[in-house]
Amino acid sequence: MNILLNFWILILALCPMQNPDTLDYWFDQEVKLDVIVSSDLDGFRQQIEKTKRRLQEGETNTHRTYNALINQREAHWQEKSAFYANKARQLAQSIKSLDQALTVLQKIQERNAPPKPDPANVPEEVWKSVLAGTPDLPHGAPGYGPGFERACPAFEEQDLQNLMGGMDGLEGTQLPDSFGGSSGLKMPAAGVISAGTWAYPGGGLHLGMDLALSMYTPVYAPADGIILYAAAPVGDGGGYLGNWCGWPFGGGNTIAMIGQSNDRLYGITFCHLSSRIQVRSGQQVHQGDLIAYSGNTGNSTGPHTHIELFDLKVSLADAIHAFQQGADFSFGTGWDTPATCSWIACRVRPELYFGR
Image (cartoon, rainbow, N blue to C red; front, side, top):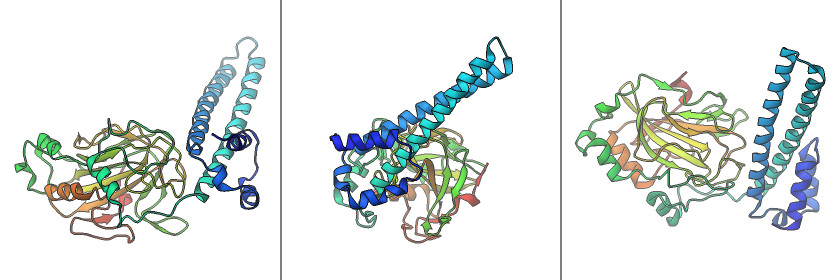
């Protein structure tokens, strides 16, 4: 890590900034981005995020102690409560400074981001990595999670046979009786919808539903089903616009599954997860099972989980076979048009299907 980068991180982390946008002139006129941006920038951002989480935990504990002193009013409670109140203010200021540092680091990364890859023209080596389940997927988030030891992509034929007891039971449109099926799709996590399906609040195509979630919020299976793909090739944070790590490009840590609700089959995908994925491809899950924890990975501006939903038009066997050919998270519907259909599925709005 070069001395210049160390200097900048120290300045960003320790000097309060009222408006990080005022650094635009410095970046444009005096500082060369190719010098500031290095292979260690993601690592620095991860360190700052970890420090911020520790400070937030300390702030929570400090407020808890302060409130206990106020309520109990033991000996010298006024002096003790004043100490903890001051400590809480100091922690809050430190957290604010780290937030400002993270904002500037994210701006630097976005300025240096490469063009978006074309999902219709995927390099052969990437396809091989995706389908073979090797850890050579595009990456860019800080650190590496459990990766492919716990989350192996590309649903395998042996998994299929082990789960179903052979292929005979797969010709219908429903999951085997052992799954039971779900009565309605459940919202996968307790969060607020920050961006709806088909368009962002400020305009622009958005093909899924964004749930704003704190880091490491539990994400649950919305229905009984089978995991098709689960991969954590990157760390837990470090998302920014133009970060094309993970699969599909920009998804970060991702999961794809087929679920059954009210005798219908659905394809369900999750993006921008943390590396704490709790399932593997080929695994059977039931509605409410913990499948992952939320994160901020890939093409993401903050902690959230992006969810897309597909109403399947084919049998379970056909849907799995199609996914095995290319790990297509769009189930054939593409990435440039809302509410489209393919021979496999139709894109639908999760907001209209998920219940609380």
